[in-house]
Length: 207
Image (cartoon, rainbow, N blue to C red; front, side):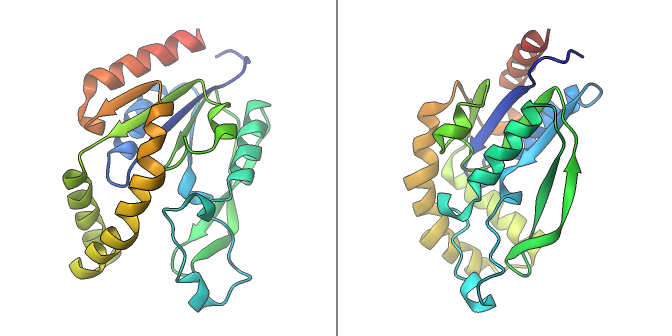
């Protein structure tokens, strides 16, 4: 692969929209070459200075929950072909973990997260901006299944969080970023035509 500037792809969309499926589909095509995925939710702010009870009040669907400055710094370092130390977030302690993950520079950088299109500085670093657009009923069902099966949550707690935090934050902050997308992908990972188009576009840029 060339040593030219890496291609940066932003993949946004609501919780349960299928962002991860789209990301994985693109990753599978380019993993033999040179691709790295940077998940926005690894970049939640460090909260070690707060008492544990205060950390429990964190609204993880708000732009201010993210350390966007650090994310931008890391993307710029990867663009300069320098390795970074990607943070890890400890959801049990609601703060950043002490360990980190060393990420080497690659030809394709995928930024994936609910609000990766929200900050103009981050958007300006992207070559391709995608928004995965999935109906709200599908998103809440997927979130219910994930949180109950993988995170041990109760139905009541998931629904309450959805109604009080997730849905209002989606309408206020996530949905409006759709207008910044170059391509809107309906139904996420099920949309093979859109994914094939993206793969072709990325290959063109790399060549």
